Amino acid sequence: MTRKRSSRSATPRRSRQGGKLRVIGGEFRRRQLPVPERPGLRPTPDRVRETLFNWLGQTLDGKRVLDAFAGTGALGIEALSRGAARVEFIEHDAKAAAQLRDNLATLKTDGGRVTCGEVGAFLAASPATDTFDLVLLDPPFHQGLVASCCAALEDGGWLSPRALIYVEAESSGLPAVPDSWELYRETRAGDTTARLYRRGDG
Image (tube, one colour):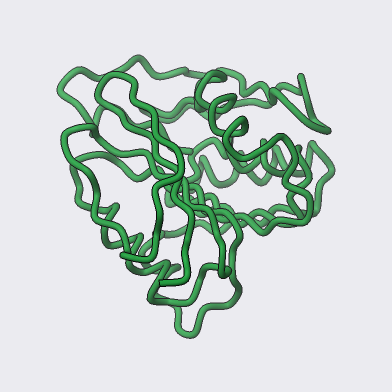
């Protein structure tokens, strides 16, 4: 997940230059992986990942996952560690994408695939190349990306019938999501609200 707070709020957070990503659960638990030196890029905090995977359940056996705006890939790697069959990582920054590929190779997992490019372009592919059981969506704040990405996921046929969609967005307004999505879990921390939606039959 990309954590680019300098573009999301008036008070930028310190970058973790040359830091480490620690996997907190599953097969790769306690493994530490390098984080590239990119402005504003840092792993999703442990407590955020713990909350999300408590919501999801600790195992994701056989699930197909899309980690959009992947950044360090912290959430997608955590999903692989907890049994996801495949994770598609989308990251526009070439250096971050290259480090993510290296980290997947270090873990000796063939379940992850990294695409270097824009999420919007990926979702605009027609027809959809696959469906996902879980989508991790954390776009930069204040750029109006949530609603368009959610609509593209639904309208483009990217979601399995009962898919779960995790959305992080600014707390200043509830993002528009498709009518068939049901709010399942929600938490707020500072200027950020995290929501987990479940796709319904509507």
